[in-house]
Every structure is written in C-alpha cells, then in structure tokens.
Amino acid sequence: MTDDTPTPQAPLPISGNQRRKMKSASRLYAVQALFQMEHSGQTVEKVMQEFEDHRFGATYEGDEMAEGDIDLFRHTMKDAVNYQAKIDQMTDRALVAKWPIARIDPTLRALFRAAGAEMVQTDTPPKVVIKEYVDVAAAFFPEGKEARFVNAVLDHMAREARPEAF
Image (cartoon, rainbow, N blue to C red):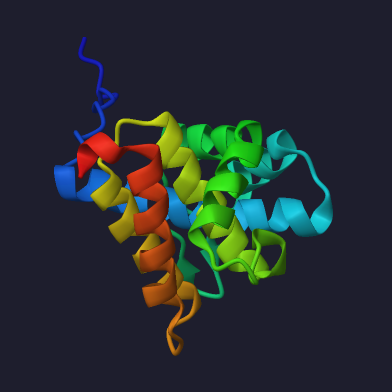
C-alpha cells in the first residue's frame, strides 16, 4: 500500500539578495513603527506586534508589502527605545544648534532613532547603515533634499558612534 500524500518540502534557502531586501524592508518598517509610537503613544511591544501581524508581507490595495527580517526589526525597535536618550543626544550634536531633534520632522526623527540604534548596538558597518537609511529617506521624501540632509547627519553620528570604522 502506498501513501499518495505529498511530503512537505523544506523552505528554499533565502538568497543573499533576498536577505538584503528583507533587511531594507525591516529598516523602513522600523521608521514607520517608531513614527507610529510617537504619535499614538503605543508601547514598543504593541507596535511591533501590529507590524509583524499586519504589515510584513501583507497586501494593501493590490500591492504586496515586502517580508521583513523580524530579528533586525525587533532589535532596531527595542534598541531605539532603550537607547533613545543616547541616540537623540548624538543626533542633536549632528544638527545645527538652532534645530534640536525635537524641532525636526517626526519622520526624520524616527529615522535617526532607527539608524542610531543600528550604529550603537550592531556590528553593521556604519556606511551600510547610512546608505540604507538615506534610501529610506528618499522613499519618504522623493521630491526633497531630505536624503542629503540625512546623509550628512548620519555621517556625523556614525563618526561619533564608531570612529574606528572611518
């Protein structure tokens, strides 16, 4: 007697290119989630759960959202919250005196916190962090000069956080 039930296949390994796309998506989601936390007053745990349940790989109006790297997303979120004071101080030092972090666009503030979390708590090369978050800025502000502004601020922050990398 033979069993015609197909045997489950192991998932295919993720390619390096797919892994990079997942990390990029996680960085974008982290910026969105940090923005949402600031505006809604929700806890980091509640916002992370919402993003993991409803954003990662979801389809909205026919557009499929990218799958994210959940580990990177969670680490970035938790580190951005746990080290917010340190990250905000680094950001303030990178901004001109008349523009403290409290006065900048809330999307950029969320972006600097997410990028700062990666700079101070991971071994990701600072130049990779800068490039990735400049790309996130360009996605949020496709018409503006924000990407160049983000590049300058993150470069300053990276040199402070990881001077040995330069």
